[in-house]
Image (cartoon, rainbow, N blue to C red; front, side, top):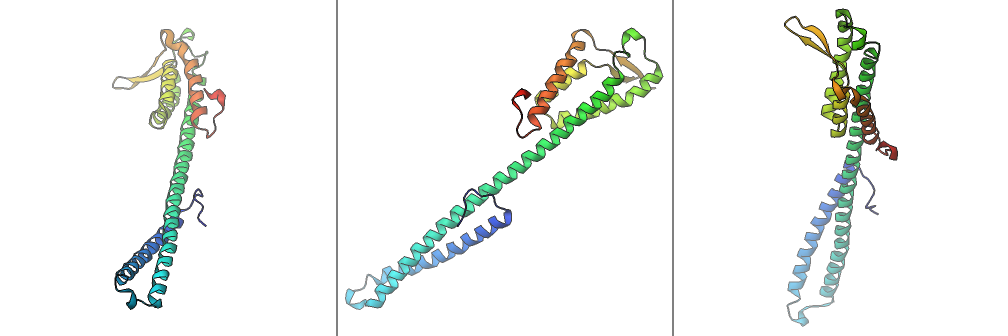
Length: 219
């Protein structure tokens, strides 16, 4: 018996479709036979004997049986196709969540590494960073930017907006001039206060988008 809502593999769907095609062919043959018997029925009654009646009854009974099989095959193939579609969609959703989860985790890891190095002890009030400091920090900042680029590709609009707040609140290391001299661009004005809000928003997006059953507190 066909189970309409059971998820099936592509091979099983192909087998059901083959059964459907076979039922369609048998149905066509029986319809031709019924038409022939119906044409014979137009002859005078005296020319039709008991054999004609038996043949007609058998043809009609067979047609009804094939009709049932044909309907069942149609329902089975359709249900199996829907089941496979749902199964494939669920698999794509799972893969997307895993990819987003990995991208977000890598972003937060790179952010934590860089921000730890440019913490309170490395601020404008402590003086101008030395060239050696900038050379040490530049690869960390570049790694953070690389992970941010992946957020822009795979992440949601919410995650991207949160990143923009985080980025605005972080010191930026830029390479200037033909010699690629490194300098620090410090956050200005209210941007320095946006870091915490952006970080909280990013974590909330991570919670909502990387879990199949996000908790209510993710919002």
